[in-house]
Amino acid sequence: MAQGSPFAWHHLRGVVPADWEVSRFSMEDRVGRLEFANRRGLQATVSWEPCEREPDRLTTMTVFLANNVLGKQAARERNLRVNDVHTAEAGAFVMGWLDLNLPLQALAYDRAGNRLVRWVFEGLTAPENRKRIVEPILRSCDFNDDPAVCEYRLFGIHAILPREYRIEDIATFPARTMMAFEGDKSKARITFRRWGLADLHLATQSLETFYRWAVRGNGIDWISSEPCTVSGWEGRRMRYSAPREHHSDRFMARRWKNGDAYVWHDRAANRVYSFEQMGPDGYPVLALPDCIPGAVPS
Image 1 (tube, rainbow, N blue to C red):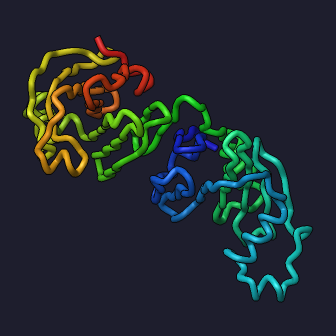
Image 2: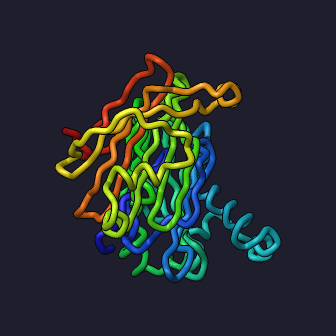
């Protein structure tokens, strides 16, 4: 497999081929999936679900084939048995396939989280594809199960947050991505943003002007702005107030006044990034380098 594209989401992280992109995703961390596609169409799906004990993998694969691929009637006519499934190991996963014309499965069990992780690869069952594409993906994977923090890496945003933060909102558009998280206990809100085509956006306006325009409509009142750098790139650190997110607070027009934002222009990547956080008085403020690997303000 050529140099790949790293991903991390809820319970799994790894590397997929560079031309694969996430075409569908689940925000739910208990049960969900990611779908990967390229110009030729759907390539693979990885899913997760709770599982109290490690299942018999051959039985699980056979049931999946009968229910989701062949159909129960065809499986009965074929007299499908667990011994019909061919298997091989790759990293923490056991691969399984019935024949070269059907999807290839790969199962791993996360004992720390009592969770079953399943890959289904489309059209990649042939031996050369297993060796060149499937096995490198599976060997690159590990469980995203640090009890203290969770890593997220999709759509050009790379973030690490304490486990108490949950995804509240995601917006993915061409050259514009946003991910917003809220703390279960603190109720603090953290937002990551990424814009492409930075050279065009900043050709006729300053970084600060662009950022103010880009986040308009969120009820933000700007308090202060000062120049800074983030990992050596030009940036601004800006203070703001904004409406509280909960319904009763919105109804009463209550605001948080401790908003803190960094925005910077990564010229090498031709991207503009921002990191925003705000919350109730006394909420645990997080440091930028702890939330975005490699982002060091000065």
